[in-house]
Amino acid sequence: MGLLVVGSLGLDTVSTPFDRVENALGGSATYISLAASYFGGPVRLVGIVGSDFPEQYIKTLENHNIDLEGLQIVEGGKTFRWSGKYHYDLNVRDTLLTELNVFEKFNPIIPEKARKAKFICLGNIDPELQIKVLDQMDDTYFVVCDTMNYWIEGKKDDLLKLLPRVNVLIINDSEARLLAQEPNLIKASREIRKLGPEILIIKKGEHGALLFTEDIIFSAPAYPMEMIYDPTGAGDSFAGGFIGYLFKSGDITPDNLKCAVVYGSAMASFCVEKFSTKGLEQLSYLMIKDRYREFLDLSRFDEK
Amino acid sequence: MGLLVVGSLGLDTVSTPFDRVENALGGSATYISLAASYFGGPVRLVGIVGSDFPEQYIKTLENHNIDLEGLQIVEGGKTFRWSGKYHYDLNVRDTLLTELNVFEKFNPIIPEKARKAKFICLGNIDPELQIKVLDQMDDTYFVVCDTMNYWIEGKKDDLLKLLPRVNVLIINDSEARLLAQEPNLIKASREIRKLGPEILIIKKGEHGALLFTEDIIFSAPAYPMEMIYDPTGAGDSFAGGFIGYLFKSGDITPDNLKCAVVYGSAMASFCVEKFSTKGLEQLSYLMIKDRYREFLDLSRFDEK
Image (cartoon, rainbow over all chains, first blue to last red; front, side, top):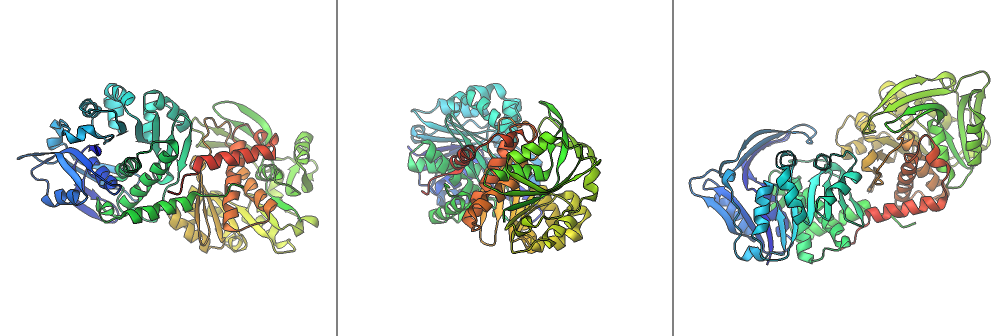
């Protein structure tokens, strides 16, 4: 049982116009797990780090009741490192460095207990590995999957094998256009859903997110942010909040999927308010509910 | 009494990847008036054309109960002409030709009856002319105003004189950033509201619209369009639907402003479904209500 999260853990060095952090806790599995942890556990993380991964980061994850049985710690190995620089408008970033290190040989092994998870979030890693994860699962399950331009362009065949096994694909607007080879997002959504996922979420950054199912289109607003301190991890936090809420409620009806999209948006908004994972570390479910309420106020209008 | 609309009337030659029309009915006052006409009249139009302005276009306006007492027809003069070409993604357009013709000497004269209008929509014209309109009004009134980059850059002083006399400013996101000299739209909204208008609407095209007042921020979704035939006039149709609904309801409370933003979005979505003003010509209030309902379905989510 529980919620399984598979993805990267890393040490991020990030600079924005406002500040800079070195070797901060990062990685898709990290952000997803932290965001999902507020919706009740257990969240079971599967990933890989080196022995240089700071003990305090292990503690941070454990403090959020994240089960680390599936975390491989490679003795003498170096943790995945990423370095990026955001520009003034924060929509553009330069990757300064990507060192895969132990991540290069990552072979996700799903512990016994995690194989029975009913909800799985596949963070943005090689689709070949994402398939390996699903192959190890015991049971029927609900799969939420992230990917990126790099895999759409470089591992399309594997991605196309994966997608029919995925319930929800979460990508951003440029990835959707690339995957569907279609600039119009409404048309693109139809093409992408034909590839397998019955549910598609397109994230549009400061313009919110769109949810597509067979029967509905839902447009979630973006939280009005005056200051984005660090956009790193926003998409992963979205995925974590989304699947966390579905896992908590156990309800995958369209109406509940809409709520989950808003919880995902709420977690992304908390994430970008501070550097690294700091925005996700000191929350409470009450704070998250309050932000959900703000999304309601932001988008609600009368029936007349 | 009634709703006063002041702006341009023109003959538009437009090509998109799908089609091309020549000397079609165009101009900001045209689109605003047609969109507003569905919300009950009288809509009183003030503008200028030459004697080459086709009789059938006069008929089109009259068929929508638009009062043309304030339409100046310059004998022997040529009507304002605009020609533009839209590219594949329809967000980029090249202006191929702008011939001001009679519009160059436009001096808006507000007829007696229109001076008592309680609602005024100032289409996108020189802010000096927009001021001249307000100077002729008898009474207290509610003013909705559009402008554009051209005036923000070239007639800033006049614009800054006008803005304190305006209740609602409607501009797009790039105009908002330019006017406030601030890339973040939430911060920009605060700066712009300090310049006068207590209500600001920022249109974001395919990403919807934002409404800002002293107390609220409202995010309206965009209608999911698979095909945009001709984006010309979308912003004016938005303004027409917005003020038309306010005029009809006579209610300028925040909750009703939100509804008006959605009615504006609905009218813009009808506008772009056909070439020129065709998308606004054959509607009914029931069709508009149905589309409003679609916006509700698109954005509504549960309170839980």
